[in-house]
Length: 639
Image (tube, rainbow, N blue to C red; front, side, top):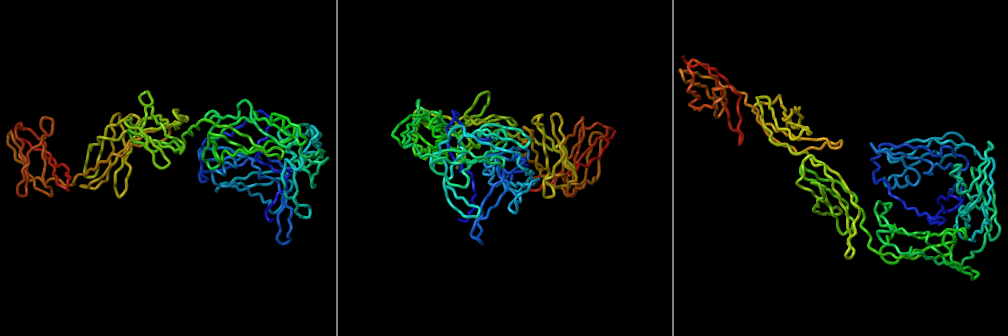
């Protein structure tokens, strides 16, 4: 045997010790789940920062060179009850202690590594720094080792203790001062009741029950049988508090019980699914339906070795035998279902069992993993984890002042529901529940709720309000006063943001320093603030050509009293448009193209008046039309 052996005063087992009428059920925490890489930082605060001899432990390590075990002492800073671990997940923090730390490390998949240097030498009196590492994050805490504060200790049993021979304990391995190993039965003496009196070095006296000692003084009593095996008859036990040890006497007797038969009163052995249980979590995060049975209703029919019989409430029997009832309740390993369940049990070394009857179908587990994983400006999609034991689900959205049913779909271990014909940029509440059929009845889980926003309505009706040979200005109508907008141009192989100007009802943006006669792509989207998060609409796209940087070279202008004819040289353009400013507006003229020149004529003009003309060319580029910049000329009609 070359493994590490700890010499302990008692061996703790997972049991049910019934001495009161309370039933405690473990509850789940806030539901948050994290990975180790989500931990932003940790801090550790000692709950018990001052340690003394009572916190010193001894282990025996096998030495291959000598073939014996060597004794190693250390101060116990590995007890999670002695620290408070605070974890910052980046915007959310939580503190853990005791078994909560054990559950946390299992959830994160990362151990809490404790480095204190005690593997090299045991601490002396004074301050000592311990480093705690969780994943990649570390924190330090300081403990102080001090001399014991207790001057004397006395322990008195509350009654004559009758320990049962070789019962209420376990066989353990011990080592003597020379490192020699032997095995003996170690009695679990800590389960008894004692009156304890402590006198401190400053004269203070504290008297209390051993069960209350840790709460009152901070010291936890350690009970043991010393370095000797016990036998039937009067024996000496030892209680150590703060490094001070007191002796007490107790009797070890032969087991007086021959057999124990357990049963429950008042119909408490009949459990109904849905009324007598709840869904609990396993260490791996999965869930199971856990039945609750009332241990205070258990009674025991006892046959003693002398032939006498008795019938006790289980609490009274435990008190008479100074023992505890151990029930093998393995629901987390093998969940119960309708039918009969027999639970193995033991009291004072006597094996027995407890039978329960279960009726009714188990209700479905509450919906888990509900998230919104799809949204548009008129639809929302939610998904959740499916339960293999659920027959189906219902999903609804609150719309128009009432809950409206949604159609469902499933894929793999996920189920989904989608809502359509919704308002863009609006918040909606959805709810989902599971159901399970049992004969003509349908059992439902609790509703799981989620709120989600649709995306802002898409951008529409983008227009080109102005162009030149080097710039483009876009405009659109604002969809909502609560919306903002982003605009970008694809230029130089990447999308570049443009400055957006928002008026009361219009939105505009301008791109400058562009190439003439070039095609540019723009995209615009709306956004809104939703509970501190920005939600964006889908992009709306438009492509625009800048104007060709080419002017018309005029050939001649001919005027009469009522007409003007403008002629110009034909350049690189395929065709031209010409307009005259007349009666307060631009009016298009007919253009004719000849051999190398083009011309237009304006008629029905006023004599002796000045008229302004503008001309631009255009040419085809595939399916698109490119325009040149305008060329202007003013001409007077004759009087």
